[in-house]
Image (cartoon, rainbow, N blue to C red; front, side, top):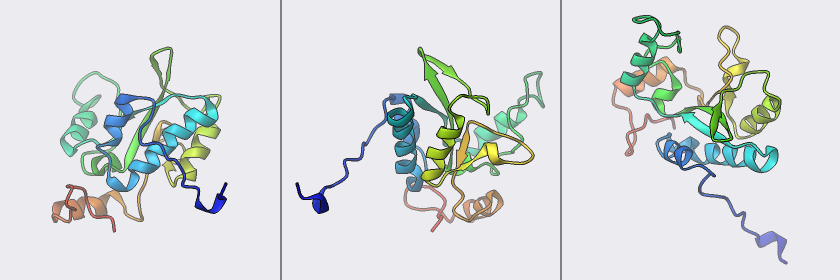
Length: 168
C-alpha cells in the first residue's frame, strides 16, 4: 500500500437527515467542520448529536428574543437579531439523540469534556466557556469578527454569491 497517496475518505453526510439539512444552510466556511464534528462524536464517543439550530434569520432571532419578554415563556436568548452568530450561519446548537428523543445537555453531561474537545479540534468556540452566560449546547466560529462587525458588513451589502456575509 502506498501510504503517501492515500486519500482521506471524508464523509459527506451525518447519520441524521435533519442535521444534514441544517448543515446545508450554514456558512460555507463551517459546513465541513460541522459535519466532521458530528461524525467524530458518533465514531469516537458513540454519541448521536443533532444540530438543533444553525442558521437563524434576524427576524427569527428577534422572535426568540421576544420570548419571555413579551409573553410568559422563559427567556431563551439574551441576543437581539443581528447580534447572534447564528444570523450569519456561523453557529450551531447541538443536542444528543437518545432513544429518538432530544437530550439537551449541560456541563453535567458525562461526555461534555470530550464533545467540547472534538468541537474545538475543528476550531469551534464553545458557549460553555463564556463568563456571563453559559450556553452549553452552543458552538460558533468568529473568524476574528464581532457580531457588531458582521451586522455592519451585512447592512452594507458585503455578502458573497451565496448570500452569506464575507468573512475573508
